[in-house]
Length: 148
Image 1: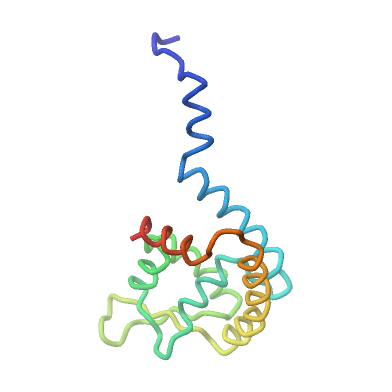
Image 2: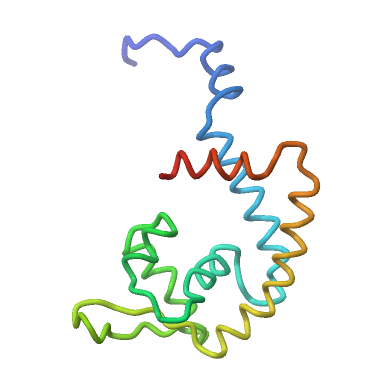
């Protein structure tokens, strides 16, 4: 047993009531559950939906910019891509301009899966925003300010 004094319970209550990280984590888990449940018929999780949306571009993006956009490191993104590649929804291709780089291509099957998921996302997202008492744009702006 150390001589470190215990954290006062008042501090616990302060963290519970004010910690932005705790509130963001709780909200993220609640949102993830809601979207995971809704997207289940498509075979996608909310994370996979967001990742595939990030790849839905006229040209296959490089791995690095996608990782930065999603707030992930490259290793985490590479791991997240593996089940999408196994399902035939994403291809990881060599970058023709940089042999060391990779390009991420949404396949036709991936595009079809994403197209099936978009109306579900529209419905759930619209209902979520309609049910909020706070302005959703203010929330987005605040989260963007934190995430950079």
